[in-house]
Length: 409
Image 1: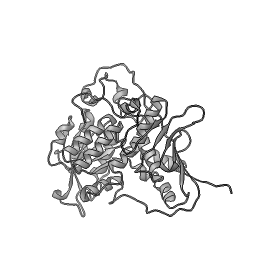
Image 2 (image 1 turned 30 degrees about the vertical axis):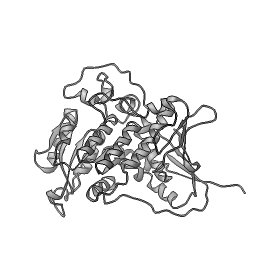
Image 3 (image 1 turned 180 degrees about the horizontal axis):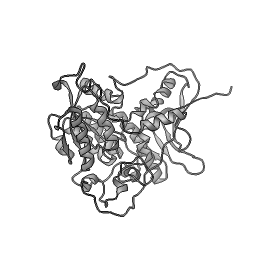
Image 4 (image 1 turned 60 degrees about the vertical axis):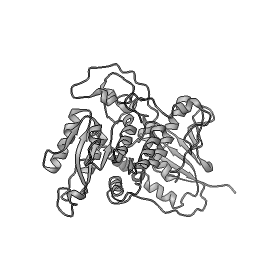
């Protein structure tokens, strides 16, 4: 008897697309009456004291979200751009009606403060690993914007630091549950049977940057912006935090980002792995398209599941075998207030957040391995337990990146 299959997808209608577009804009700085001290506001001594590092597009949105929380006392900002730093300070001072918010150019000064319990980090991607590891060493919990790491080895260092120092570290991919929770609920309820294939539509890799230099504007610490990345001359399309991956922002360039594969891949591959309930797994093999038999970049997972990077095919599509399978308990955020509330709840309770750094790292390994397979143009074997490509020296070299002194992990 011929087997049938069930296909579910997360394709959005026009209203959904508009909603998604709005959601991609940093959240507004909304203050409620309780945030201003009315109602059941925790006493100052009971609040979680926070600071932010990297307060541009996404960092500004994160700042607004944490500023609006009753249980947070926000005390410090850090950004290498003076105008961004001053605007961020102004928002905090306006929130509390004083001028007490400290503003730093160097994140190490913020880290040195004993009164800060937690930070949020939304620097360009090439800084994430160093900031998170240093924060853990300094005894801070961390909410880190996606994509959490810029290479496999940095991601593992982040996980190790969180565990070694007993810190709560949450990845900042709100779309994993927000965009794909509905699809995941159906799959976890058994509506497609056993998941056999998952298709992910997301952008491709970043590229080398050949932009010529321009004078560094006043108020920008260009050397600090570069940090661990190779030295390169200033250009506005290097430093821009635009969401473009078409050559007009740092998200386009390999030294600072993995391009669409990591920037939106953190959301979409993360969502796909959540839907298929393979969040704690890794692939065994990654096969790039060859123009003949292999149409899409293909990840082979234990049990035969295939995950595809399929640009232009949809959002996240799931194919199941339509067999009868038992429903599984469905996970969600802890606390109230989405991914931000989940993080703050876990800071209080010392539980692991929904997007715990280990699971975020598993997603990022998928993204990074895809980039390596594209770059080498051949299949990779992957040992997910040892996080290495057995016997493949060229691939293993690409699991890490060189860093300029003093920015080591």
